[in-house]
Length: 595
Image (tube, rainbow, N blue to C red; front, side, top):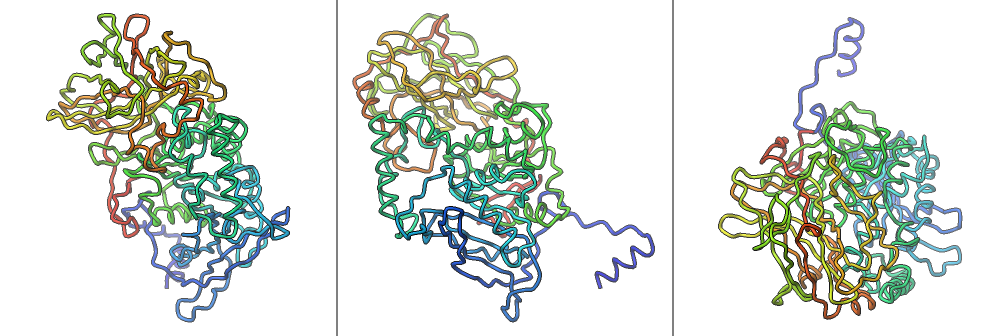
């Protein structure tokens, strides 16, 4: 009947009736009920050019009544999975007309070397990208039932693998889109300001994440990495090992050059959040012919081909399969969903107000507001008054003398923070190294304190990379970047400037609330108990511990040492709320829907 109506419309020259508006992003699409079941073919060998075999499980659309595989060809969703869990083909996508392929990553699960010998997972080394390219070629040209259009899928390592593959496939490849969720990889993911985080020691432990077959060789590989870092060997610095595994602005530019749209997804408390946001700005900059590594400031043009969702959660939280399906329907099936037409391609949860907002840039403010450390624990927009210094010691934060606080006056009408934060602290140390943690907090009129974001820096790796650092329109530092390649000896008693990146946020500071900067020197036990939250300085190398032990620091605030925190301030609730809601596939979480 639908085909007959369409034919009559074409013959009579009448315009097709407008589709009813929907509540989903773009306003013209909604998830269809499944029209297929799923049949799975397991352990299909995919052989790499070096003879390594990567087994694949393939979910095919099947007749809902008979269970037999459906005829015809379909677009293919591919995930490269290293985990002993979550690797099955996803019936949600298969039921809606996709082939779903889950391929084991080399060195994990049932992947096999040519001689059936040891095989290590190189954790995003160059070979992983090459494997991804070969898997894509197989899925497009040799997989039975494939129509040649490939989308990449997955969260965490599966998301990072997408980025490496999409950057390596070249222009005009079968990859038509990616959804790299929970995805960013770099030295900064595993180190906090140059100090190993709680994640690093876990490399040397048997966590059993990737199955039993290659457990021994992967454990040995991880233990070697931990020992080298602890001994201040090459992997303790941002050298070749980490740079080969970094999802950076150059990679974003290659993905744009390859013509591959991307939907990034993360959470404010997720370890990958700062890197994911920087990667999104790099995609937008590259798409518009600007240097990929800089900030995306208000007024710069953007495209709906590259979008990001940052929710109120941690690593792997808040993903919505229906929105992901809409993205795939747009780019793999050519449906006119409207999702790509948005002028505000950043969909960000505003913490403190529990609202979703849409933004066209990040940071959302072009000129930052400096607040200076001042006498009497003050944090003021005016420079330091009386010359002075405050003393803090290298010690756990629950020990006396281990923290300093600097607090603004209450904001009568409230404020909004919308961007990364930079603290430039002038300080000296009694020892040959220094470690500073800067934490931004929201303080209510009743004294309640909520942590907004934090960052840290060790003095021996504090050299600033001017070219990679972000600055606002006035030239103020807003996102410091450090090469972390070479130790620089700290002269005891000498005052130096330490530029600390405080992680990005969108935060509503309610009327009569204040902001507080806490300067401390060691992370708490709670902060060092997990490994998928924001990295904290937790697992110092032997050399770092020797240089820090017994240290006492002077935090300087005078005309030549103007210790400051640069804040991305906007008027309270200036960013308009976006339409949002719970969906059948959101797991009861609120999702941004008005794109």
